[in-house]
Length: 394
Image 1 (cartoon, rainbow, N blue to C red):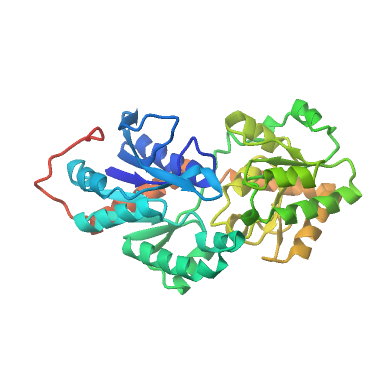
Image 2 (image 1 turned 90 degrees about the horizontal axis):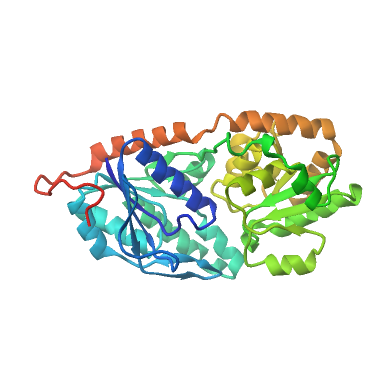
């Protein structure tokens, strides 16, 4: 297939959506498909069309900074580009990962040319707005998202619970496609005694981890409250945060004992995960929460709300601990239980790893390929006058 992928975030940006998109693009290319990737330009790379490899051609478009996250870009509409690319490259299907102006212009071009399109529900923008003083527009955001996704041939959602919620809200043609993990990379064997010493921890001491954006929508205050409860009974425990975000300096000032590691990638990230013991994930706004699965693969005991990836993957008391959504007291109690009960914690860590081993990316990419083949066959309109082109078509 010739697949158009449109996204407003992609590596080297560091977030769950960007990392998922890289798995999709590279995974589909590895199966022999050709991909046209359209994304906002970055100052650290050339803006002309450039091949990423022999099967992936990237096009950069104009963008503007996302409020609160200047390192991320909203893509500007690119109708002219899509009007040129879709017929000349004989696109079979588009995957539109983000719902900004760039994604909307791609969706309209697909409708114009009769090309099948899959949209991705990667971010709960209508929930995030409540954490940035814009809760009043949440219903308008939800209405726009429904309009956007219902114009696509289908929408990928990461969990069955999200599919049920969106379907009850009028969203149509939903397909559950979860997230995967490279369990050979996120591996307990990467645990580092040297790194733990840097955190001033012995082997017996507890490293309580948080990985993700340090931001209001992640409910990070609950994680700190849970850690303070743990520390009151385990004074040698340390709270280690991996990531960056708008609240980082406020956190540094309010919690000087916290270990702020900044953003980590690749081997360093895997090593940080594996060197922890307990993983706190108090977010209530996730569509999935890739970090939950990465923590499980790394052999951590996860404490989370019964939402998103945790709801789908964790059997409470078997491979992690769950608190009812929004019940802060239950979350804090679960965190303390995990810290206090070493036999339970060791059981959770073992079974978390076993669960993650069943969530490999290759199987998920094959499932996505089958879905794309099915939808493109049903919905696309072939134009016999369009010349066949490779992924190098400008």
